Image (cartoon, rainbow, N blue to C red; front, top):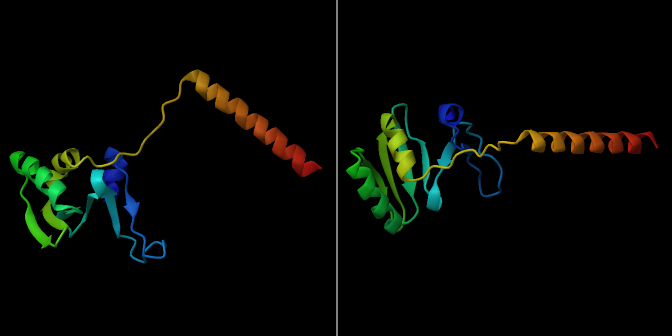
Length: 132
């Protein structure tokens, strides 16, 4: 999953437990999508997509099937469903379920200069406070 963060700038998040601490498994990561959907690695060749609601899942499943994505039902609960798909189809799935991207700010030269001036001012004030 890490390669999706490097190449496509998808937001990759480590799973947390009920106490808000990271789980001990460093491979327990996922890509968040719109409406609480998550994409995560299932095994070496397949990824899983987990939907929290049946209504949203049925809407997106129709679009995924129209695009030719091969889905295999893994789990079908009262509200949530999980499907497996091939890693080669990741780009199609990510686009349809609106996988979140890392937001990178693009600054104009004026904004960069203003930020430099603010940092210089903050450093100057910080060093003055430590000298007193």
